[in-house]
Image 1 (cartoon, one colour):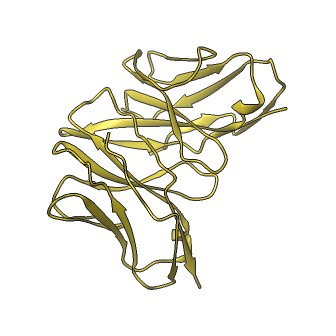
Image 2 (cartoon, each protein chain N blue to C red; image 1 turned 30 degrees about the vertical axis):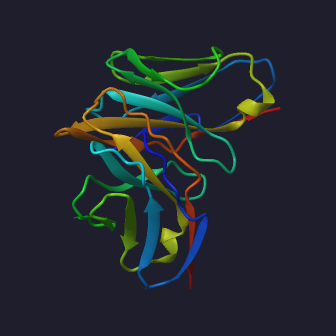
Length: 113
Length: 114
C-alpha cells in the first residue's frame, strides 16, 4: 500500500471549513484513498473514500487531484465535535478478505471556538 | 443497528498473565480485524479473519493469536503479557459494497499491563 504524508496538526475556527491535505505521490491505479478519524480514546470512524472522482457524503467531501497524487478532506462547517486525529490511508481494493488498513500518525485537527 | 461491540472495556493484568478480548461484529458482517494502538501512534494491524479463516497477520509475535466463531464473533488472545502490550485493542468488522468494502471499528478494549 502506498505511503501517505499528512501535516501533524492543524487548527480551524468553529463554523469554518476545515481542509485537511494528504500527499500520496506513489499511489497506484487500483488504490483507493480512505479517510478515518479518531476522537480521543474511541475507535476510528470511517468518513469517506474515493478512487479518482470527487466524493461527498453527509460528513465530508473528498477532493482528489487529477494525477491522484494528493487529496483534501473537507469538513464544510467544522464544529467542536470534529476535534480529532484524521487519518488518510491508501489501499488496494478489489481484494476482499485482505482488508488491512495501514495507519500513519495522522493530522490532529483542533477546532477553535 | 448495534455497532461493533467489544468486551471488556478496560482490563488490568500483570506481566506473564494471559488475556482474552472479545468482539462482536455488526450483524451481517463476516470479516473481523484486530488492531493494537499504543499511546501516541496510529492503530497497527494484528489479524484479519473472514469466514473463520485467518486472512492476514501483522508483524506481531506468536504470543498473539485469534479465532473467529461460526456467528462471526472473534477473540484475541495474548499470552505471557509484557508491559509493552499495554494498549487500546480495536476490533473492526467490514462488509462488501460492490467491489469495495467499508470497515467499522468498535470502541476498543484498554489493556494495562503492570
